[in-house]
Length: 521
Ligand code: FE
Ligand code: CA
Image (cartoon, rainbow, N blue to C red; front, side, top):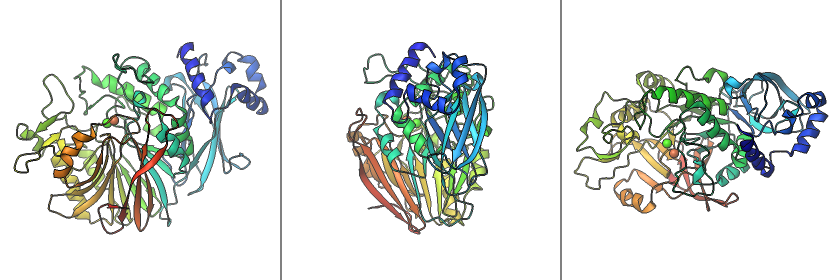
């Protein structure tokens, strides 16, 4: 990171409500008894060391991952980072503390694993390194296994392309005091900002390929104070999608059919792990990273996260000389129906089948993209015209998944997704005439541009499984889950380039326990 970049970060810092000024950092450091460090590292003390903020993630009943990254130049070969976690915001009742060593091999990131915590309660945490103190983050543990839970409040979000808008949605999310945020993919975009476009903010650097490119991109996104506030306000769970690595990648094939794509994939996975509050155990192994996992929220909900990128077959019928998705009629691409095709890979498919929990009132499936069909062909007598990168391009794996769900007769199943830059609320059925098996909320993008609404409006009338389809909305979805029902609010941003844009509820839906399908509320 060059001096020029640091200035840029520092400029962003001074606008952040979470980031103390350099003077207050100095005062905090002196109060913490760190004066000798300032004498020895006078230059080091001159730059903000927590410019990318703090985060927490993957809440368990007794533990949580606390994340930060030591930023700036002139760092030694290893940096001692002390963390503490308290029951109160003033840190008078410290519950846990520890020390991590931040090293350049991991971009000086810290993934501290606080253990031995009490279930179902809020905590505050902060870091100290090189005589500076980080902003304070707020997080919470999950309820104890099997514990009765009256209410869970969470959000889903995805697709926060930095050069497509500002993050007023995150400011709104941070104000909502949610139990957690589930981020469903496209945390960064690998693209360069096109030279012929002049948005109010641009991606720094070229299209990402190398580890240094991806690190720089993550650092740029994380410099945003609203995104920092959303991380500092609640724990996150995350899964990746395509742009975290490259548009429409599938297994080991990239859209551009890059030779040695596994190298790029490994670089992207490394930077992704480094910059997000993943546990140490999720560190990418060569070029693979564990994304699928299951989580419980007491006796109320089982949350299953899957990975439909890493193990999928390549999209069918790509454009000549390309990989990736395309919109195509199944009449000229019958191989889309090949039953041997896979979206999750055989091992993950088997794993998923063992995760559903019929003892809990709610099973939530967190995954990457729209599961309900979106057929662009209006004539019902003709084969469908579909987007091959989504579940529509993998109809047989989707049928297997939904048929398995139907056979289990789970109390209530809700599928959560993103990727398509539009809000969709949908019914999921094994066959068009069959009963509703699950309810789907596919949330729109935080900023990333969607298709024209007029285009989507042409498809909605002959896709009755889609109750709601708004591609011009940007924002996120906020949920309240109780044993009796799930309420969803689609929070939308009025002006995408205004940092302080009003955010309002565009629509509200309710899923009543025992009655699959969303009702407008
Ligand atoms: Fe996206
Ligand atoms: Ca995507």
